[in-house]
Image (cartoon, rainbow, N blue to C red; front, side, top):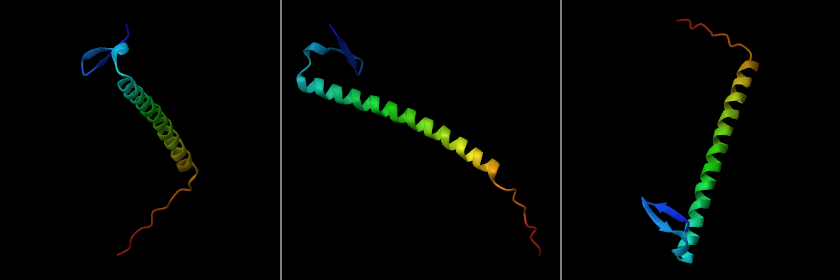
Length: 69
């Protein structure tokens, strides 16, 4: 017997309707996709930081102009 827990209640997977099983599969797909996208976002953010740091090292120094009054 395979059970799933939803809102702290255990349900026998074999006793769920086909419609409930389809909704569960959709929920699991969305959860997995969100996890994948969050991991991808973390990788992209890390790459962005690395590119920004590399760019800063390549920029010429900026001389501050003195303001005259």
